[in-house]
Picture 1 (cartoon, rainbow, N blue to C red):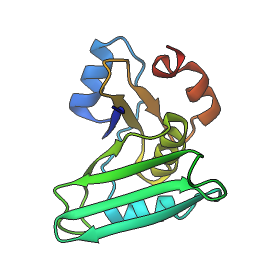
Picture 2: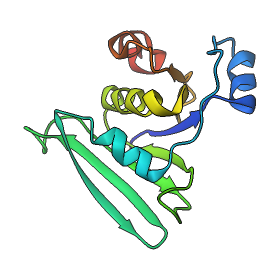
Picture 3: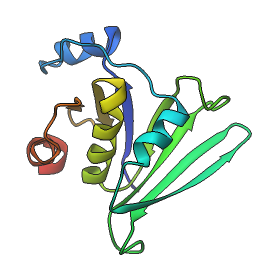
Length: 146
Protein backbone atom coordinates (compact mmCIF):
# COMPACT_ATOMS: atom_id res chain seq x y z
CA UNK A 1 0.00 0.00 0.00
CA UNK A 2 1.12 3.50 -0.71
CA UNK A 3 0.63 6.80 1.01
CA UNK A 4 -2.04 9.30 0.00
CA UNK A 5 -1.07 12.96 0.27
CA UNK A 6 -3.77 15.60 0.65
CA UNK A 7 -2.92 19.13 -0.43
CA UNK A 8 -4.68 21.93 1.45
CA UNK A 9 -4.32 25.67 0.81
CA UNK A 10 -3.24 27.31 4.03
CA UNK A 11 -6.10 29.47 5.22
CA UNK A 12 -8.33 29.70 8.33
CA UNK A 13 -8.93 26.10 9.52
CA UNK A 14 -5.69 24.74 8.10
CA UNK A 15 -3.69 27.60 9.62
CA UNK A 16 -5.34 26.98 13.00
CA UNK A 17 -4.62 23.25 12.79
CA UNK A 18 -0.96 23.84 11.86
CA UNK A 19 -0.61 26.27 14.77
CA UNK A 20 -2.19 23.73 17.14
CA UNK A 21 0.38 21.20 15.89
CA UNK A 22 3.17 23.64 16.76
CA UNK A 23 4.15 24.22 13.14
CA UNK A 24 5.04 27.64 11.74
CA UNK A 25 2.54 29.07 9.30
CA UNK A 26 3.02 31.60 6.54
CA UNK A 27 1.42 35.02 6.95
CA UNK A 28 -0.37 35.01 3.62
CA UNK A 29 -3.29 32.75 2.73
CA UNK A 30 -3.34 30.16 0.00
CA UNK A 31 -6.21 29.34 -2.31
CA UNK A 32 -7.38 26.18 -4.01
CA UNK A 33 -6.14 25.74 -7.57
CA UNK A 34 -8.40 25.09 -10.52
CA UNK A 35 -7.80 22.03 -12.70
CA UNK A 36 -6.67 24.41 -15.45
CA UNK A 37 -4.28 25.98 -12.95
CA UNK A 38 -2.97 22.51 -12.10
CA UNK A 39 -2.33 21.89 -15.79
CA UNK A 40 -0.46 25.19 -16.07
CA UNK A 41 1.71 24.26 -13.06
CA UNK A 42 2.39 20.79 -14.46
CA UNK A 43 3.34 22.34 -17.82
CA UNK A 44 6.32 23.98 -16.07
CA UNK A 45 7.86 20.59 -15.20
CA UNK A 46 10.88 19.99 -17.42
CA UNK A 47 12.02 16.48 -16.47
CA UNK A 48 8.61 14.83 -16.21
CA UNK A 49 5.96 13.65 -18.65
CA UNK A 50 2.32 14.29 -17.80
CA UNK A 51 -0.75 12.46 -19.08
CA UNK A 52 -4.35 13.27 -18.22
CA UNK A 53 -7.56 11.33 -17.71
CA UNK A 54 -10.40 13.85 -17.86
CA UNK A 55 -14.02 12.88 -18.30
CA UNK A 56 -17.35 13.48 -16.61
CA UNK A 57 -16.64 13.71 -12.89
CA UNK A 58 -13.00 12.60 -13.29
CA UNK A 59 -9.79 14.65 -13.44
CA UNK A 60 -6.49 12.86 -13.00
CA UNK A 61 -2.92 13.65 -13.97
CA UNK A 62 -0.21 11.02 -14.01
CA UNK A 63 3.30 12.41 -13.73
CA UNK A 64 6.32 10.23 -14.51
CA UNK A 65 10.03 10.72 -15.06
CA UNK A 66 10.45 11.56 -18.76
CA UNK A 67 13.59 9.47 -19.20
CA UNK A 68 12.73 6.54 -16.91
CA UNK A 69 8.93 6.26 -16.79
CA UNK A 70 8.98 2.70 -15.45
CA UNK A 71 11.51 3.17 -12.66
CA UNK A 72 11.82 6.91 -11.99
CA UNK A 73 9.83 9.24 -9.76
CA UNK A 74 6.09 9.29 -10.37
CA UNK A 75 2.80 10.34 -8.78
CA UNK A 76 -0.85 10.79 -9.66
CA UNK A 77 -3.04 13.80 -8.86
CA UNK A 78 -6.76 13.29 -8.36
CA UNK A 79 -9.28 16.13 -8.21
CA UNK A 80 -12.22 15.44 -5.92
CA UNK A 81 -15.73 16.04 -7.24
CA UNK A 82 -14.51 17.42 -10.58
CA UNK A 83 -17.11 19.35 -12.53
CA UNK A 84 -15.47 22.41 -14.11
CA UNK A 85 -11.84 23.01 -15.10
CA UNK A 86 -12.11 26.67 -14.07
CA UNK A 87 -13.55 26.07 -10.58
CA UNK A 88 -11.31 25.79 -7.50
CA UNK A 89 -10.84 22.16 -6.54
CA UNK A 90 -9.76 19.85 -3.76
CA UNK A 91 -6.98 17.46 -4.69
CA UNK A 92 -4.79 14.70 -3.42
CA UNK A 93 -1.76 12.79 -4.62
CA UNK A 94 -2.34 9.08 -4.99
CA UNK A 95 0.89 7.46 -3.89
CA UNK A 96 4.15 8.21 -5.64
CA UNK A 97 7.46 9.79 -4.72
CA UNK A 98 7.17 12.44 -2.00
CA UNK A 99 10.11 14.37 -3.47
CA UNK A 100 8.20 14.79 -6.74
CA UNK A 101 5.02 15.71 -4.86
CA UNK A 102 6.89 18.51 -3.04
CA UNK A 103 8.27 19.74 -6.38
CA UNK A 104 4.79 19.80 -7.93
CA UNK A 105 3.17 21.50 -4.93
CA UNK A 106 5.91 24.13 -5.07
CA UNK A 107 4.91 24.84 -8.69
CA UNK A 108 1.24 25.11 -7.65
CA UNK A 109 2.17 27.43 -4.76
CA UNK A 110 3.71 29.88 -7.26
CA UNK A 111 0.16 30.87 -8.29
CA UNK A 112 -1.97 29.74 -5.35
CA UNK A 113 0.07 30.62 -2.30
CA UNK A 114 1.06 28.35 0.58
CA UNK A 115 -0.11 24.74 0.64
CA UNK A 116 0.16 22.04 3.31
CA UNK A 117 0.95 18.50 2.14
CA UNK A 118 -0.57 16.04 4.59
CA UNK A 119 0.39 12.36 4.35
CA UNK A 120 -2.17 9.82 5.56
CA UNK A 121 0.50 8.23 7.79
CA UNK A 122 -0.02 10.58 10.72
CA UNK A 123 3.34 12.27 10.14
CA UNK A 124 3.42 16.08 10.32
CA UNK A 125 2.60 17.95 7.12
CA UNK A 126 5.03 19.85 4.95
CA UNK A 127 4.31 23.52 4.38
CA UNK A 128 5.21 24.67 0.87
CA UNK A 129 5.33 28.31 -0.16
CA UNK A 130 6.34 29.94 -3.42
CA UNK A 131 9.59 31.01 -1.75
CA UNK A 132 10.32 27.57 -0.26
CA UNK A 133 13.48 25.68 -1.04
CA UNK A 134 12.27 22.31 -2.35
CA UNK A 135 15.51 20.52 -1.47
CA UNK A 136 15.34 21.84 2.09
CA UNK A 137 11.76 20.60 2.53
CA UNK A 138 12.75 17.17 1.24
CA UNK A 139 15.76 17.03 3.60
CA UNK A 140 13.85 18.12 6.71
CA UNK A 141 10.31 16.70 6.30
CA UNK A 142 9.86 14.20 9.10
CA UNK A 143 7.73 12.01 6.82
CA UNK A 144 10.82 11.32 4.68
CA UNK A 145 13.23 10.83 7.55
CA UNK A 146 11.69 7.74 9.10
